[in-house]
Image (cartoon, rainbow, N blue to C red):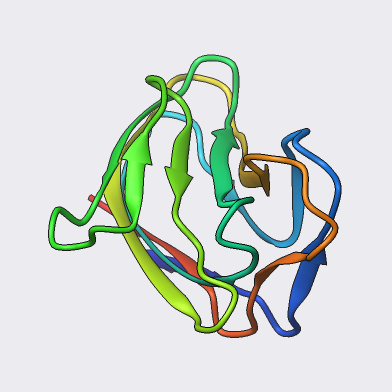
Length: 137
């Protein structure tokens, strides 16, 4: 199929960790020598002091050029490969991201990693319905 989608089927919370770790649901196989359009929407909540950070792994020879929707005031790029999202304890936030994934001659998996940006005991939660979509270009 030219469109692949991974969707969180349950909420996933993380507390007291700033180590980027694989998401339990958000990963997709990618084919060698293929270019994909990439979109992702994250529904998240948590402590306003913790925020959250996201990154990706992909096959060794792949390149993911990605950014957030510029209409979202809740994302800040901390480095080329990591984006921090601002959370609020009292409400859910939505972060929308887009980009292009170019896979070289090695197939593999595109996988979301995430964690709190600052240690807090209140869990940061990526909610059911969060998704990644890849479209072969």
